[in-house]
Image (cartoon, rainbow, N blue to C red; front, side, top):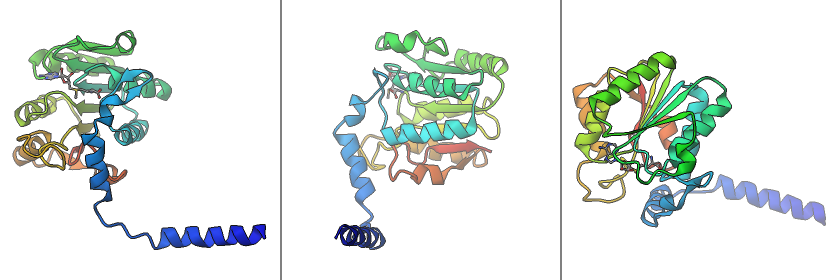
Length: 234
Ligand SMILES: C[S@@+](CC[C@H](N)C(=O)[O-])C[C@H]1O[C@@H](n2cnc3c(N)ncnc32)[C@H](O)[C@@H]1O
């Protein structure tokens, strides 16, 4: 009897998977649900608020574990959850590293993130020339690959300026994540105005040979808050 039940369960499971027919809109619906319910604002890493989708965080963890960078550059700290997340993963990789996290204001920075010795926090606009100088200094102190993530002011002009600031600082194989390209109807917040997605398009018009899109990782979990934003420096 037990064998018959197990066999029926096996056949039903195989049939359910084999005959599954996606309508094509599930991932987009989930994307909109995830964004519009603000669950991403109620997400935390080790108790520190982190404004990300958890599947993006998992994806970044996989990229970082493969890339093994020595320097992580984050524009847009907010409460520091994402900086702490990156530092936690990097510590496990066991190589010398630094996380640089820049925000125009650190008034919301959580003390639990602030006291991590592997993270350097700078209070400044991300596009100031001193930020490029500091990245250059950290590059010589921590030679190796860079993982950079843009998550600050989500206007096209600002993101484009950040990408241009990083242009002479990133080398072949380095990774650039342009976050929140989901706004302006990609597919959330239609009517936002030109944002990160349009910044990537504008950058590529000017510098078409700089990056290759990592489409496989971008599509891996069905949706991402960084559509068109997974870039590998050529
Ligand atoms: C979306 S939040 C960052 C979220 C954070 N990375 C996380 O995952 O939890 C955007 C942050 O960008 C900062 N910001 C806005 N304009 C900026 C600028 N010009 N330069 C640097 N940071 C800026 C804001 O103060 C805000 O804290």
